[in-house]
Length: 311
Image (cartoon, rainbow, N blue to C red; front, side, top):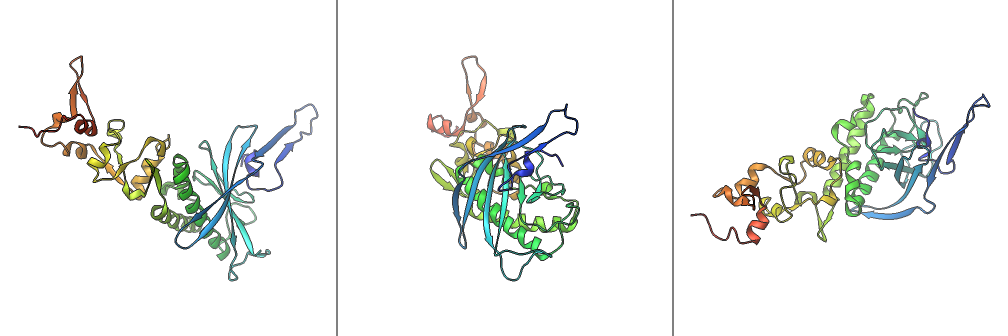
């Protein structure tokens, strides 16, 4: 585990620590996590729940790494309790989303030694074993992951409406849920699959002023990237709106998620040409140099090139 300011992400009162070498000639090293003075809050509602979530940004001044942290308080039911520890009436669950991809962690206040490939860190009052390399196989930890699932769904749904390019990092891919602990992996996968089902049902992307569900989205195959205009997508994909650039992350993670979750409609090369199966030449125009260049179907209709059927 690297000892940097990220170990302080989910602590309320401790914001820095310092390494003091035994050799006085060596320089002291201080790590400080700078947090927003005034966290913001928002509410996410679905058919069954209304949840308030606090959010703040923080930065490690030494490394330049920064995160957006989301936290929410959950009421603890009477039938769950911690192992050999006091159980409060409420418990806090948190997620830290980095602004740049980096190794993330499972936290139980402080980081555990559980290895993860997830693109975000998560925190709860987990009961770890004494080595902090595993979580105890108890009902409490399993219940906490159900709350992590709820928070993940709520935050991802919120980001889809506000900053959709960041929302994709909160939707895990299958390979990212693999863990060395088979029992923990099963719990994590159950929790995250539940979250993704909820995201698919509830999330909306704001496109041209309209709130659009994932099933109403279309997107081009990589071979067509950059070749279609906004008006092409609904023409080819049975009315589904094309996913605009501002809703895509720069790493292209969105594409893997849509493919794996089978969200939306992918437009492949055959789809594009099928629309003009009577005359493939309708896709092209000749520029001033005599070169054939591809034009979009939207321009094709707009400019009246396709006003007549081919003879």
